[in-house]
Length: 265
Image: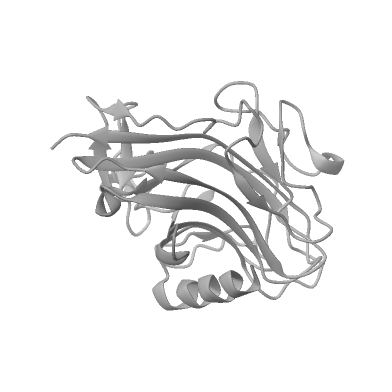
């Protein structure tokens, strides 16, 4: 796991991968470094945000991008219609059977242990109360621990050889990295690996939590990953939370409703 942490950190530095860094800075100003854009009171990723898909500059008027329809997602700054499409069978991808079928790894002495939970979980009352977006359960993690490391949850999926494949998932986060000595950003990522070799063949950064920032609740968001380039392959999909420093601020995270839609082309 230490090797994987090093590889992913190097890949993150080199690739960037369209990350979103956000939160309230110590001087009270909103931090929206490129490529994120400030829309209202929050930073968004214009390549993924379905409400402000393709937004630029001040996110006002024509710069606000497009609000995608309910049956569409924002991918690479454009609304992509997911219908008609078939859902790829993905056993227990909303965690209704706990962690069956998932391989997990937690950091040492986590602020909140990686686990499946229902409505109303809110460590110490600091952040949002958990509320699964599909079914009665969701995956929860504290996104913090006593030593640097990765928190992960992964499973192997076989993609069909034909058609496009778009994975969507719901997530929600809260954190407080003010006053705890944080000097390095945390990240939530999705890694795609080749199961036999364990080689990382794809990495997408979904959210970067800036050191020195605080945000109790991002609200429910949707992540989008285009898996089409892996068509016909068995891939290991890993949801990763990178904690580069130990005990530098509590956090809380919810993941749920993972779906892969296949569109014949």
